[in-house]
Length: 504
Image 1 (cartoon, rainbow, N blue to C red):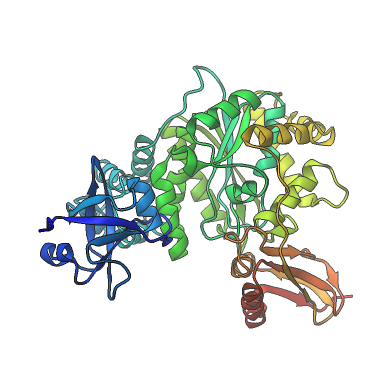
Image 2: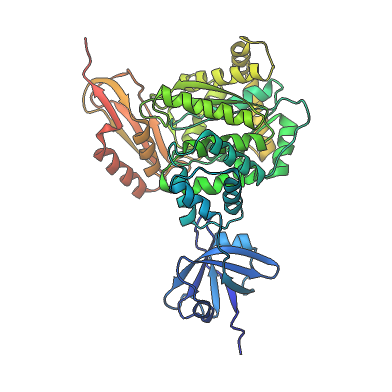
């Protein structure tokens, strides 16, 4: 007689992103005897390994009633083998949810509560539903400075730390986002590292934007470096451009980001905790943070930008970081390209000093690099811009960028989309408004960042005079269906840009 406590594992090949999911038939003896329900949390044990997964109930005969199917995330997390015997039981209750519920009802989050929540998230004990509750509790400006510091410390504590040696200056930069095409980081890393400073840059993937630095760099080189590999690259080249999730410096952050992306929510306090925790874990000592400000950027007013700057500098100081912020123009996209590969081509053009390179992307990168060179004491105050410009103009930055990419696994050519459609002006006039948020949404509907070659090429800037029939932007898509989807969105959203009659 079969032991009622066991089922045999099978790999279903279902992509549930990072959420581990287990599938059981509704007539499964374990499912019925244990009283499991759909969306319940189940602890799976195989040998000396165990994980917690969300249960989905299967009707029909997708697999034998003696088997349990695992999603790709669950299979890899458990390190399972086909046909392996496993036991199942109700997952222990997640006690830290009481702190989330308290926050939802207006109770301040204590240091103890923050530690318990972040530890449970990092350990995979939160379902996506519970993660959604946490993200919602922290949404908008719902965390005060003390709570933000508590969460930041907790996020640092559950990850790995890199130590680069006492009295060594380690520089870094971050952009709070919300501005399409603002891919300055790879250029800045190349300039700074070429001048002898150490800049171990770890970046997130896109949350609500068409591309993050990690997404763009992945079209150029390997970004899943791992902790030891990242350190090796930095020791060799003075800098790296890695995906933070592969280094596990702040593992809870990428779990939270996944749910923020699905909800299209950004939390001010969680943003601060995300940025500062990763910088502390990476061993940074001096950090520059770019805050674009504009009516359709993530940060819409100078007042909000100044409040965010205070939170970043204060949280950084509480954890031993020297943080400087810089407010920049966020009224329109920066480079020509919006989307991983298109932004990669933009930054390559700047590094290679090509005549058609984006002047805005170049200038922004130089300004940021100049400040970092001065913060890192590579030059005197007021000398950073001259040093940064010389490094870029001479080709030294391009050489350093190539060396970093080679150290990470080799420099490759970004992909090109199979389908394109150019959108034109319907009348003569002046480009008076470009809506960053709607432009980002359009690029995402075309497939970015999941389809690396997808996105938008911008052909106009604010203040440009355009003629009827002149190209405004080109949509790029890897699938014809996504191109058509994006075109439908464009035609239904005329507020994506505004052309006013030219005043003579």
